[in-house]
Image (cartoon, rainbow, N blue to C red; front, side):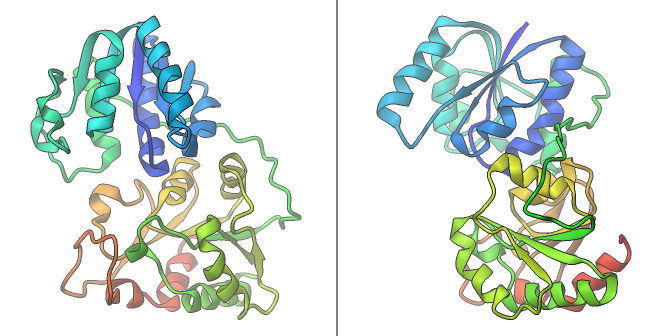
Length: 319
């Protein structure tokens, strides 16, 4: 059985899809094809349960679009799963030669994609954690009691002279409203050294370089700065070697959970029931206006209300 997964984008969404892929491989002995954009391509392509990762390079459409269309039209799939539920993913599903195309129920579709003529899984709780929502496709395809396993390979190759014991502070977030403060992360790093005798490794993307500079300006030798210096695969190795991971609501948080790390998640505008860490500790202050799911906020009191002591107290329970 050949199954095409259309899940293009965000790292957290991709990580939360892996348990479904593992169940499709183990339960149906499926050959898994996955249409994926560059951000998470490396992570998907090296997964043992993914037989073929099809790269859609959205940054080079003129070249990528004909190549992807050719691959989708020359291969006949038994099943195509639209897990992205947006117009772009729906079009790709329609382009693919397939016996069956399956998507979410109408209530959980975005951008009117319920209008695509796909099979629909039964309606369910849209507020459930996304791991559970993706696994509904496994049940729909006859896999009873699917297991929750990510099976992300780790090679233990992290270098940068990292110490044996360290805590990762993942400082970035895709949505500006999900960011914590530079002062908070700097204070946490200082207290991690004082209380646990460990250095902190800060991670993030290129857009987090200014925050990293602000954090390191307050550093007294407690921080190893890897912000903007890690590929996706190397970030995975850094997270895998950590004693614990502190993160805002963003993709590396989900990756740390999948790697079975102890996670402290800092939440403000988002609902952790649906998009929080599948396992781990969530710090979220009720400030009356959250969860609001805003991408930007002029007065992010929900995030600013989280204190370094909150984070250290959570770490004391797990380190």
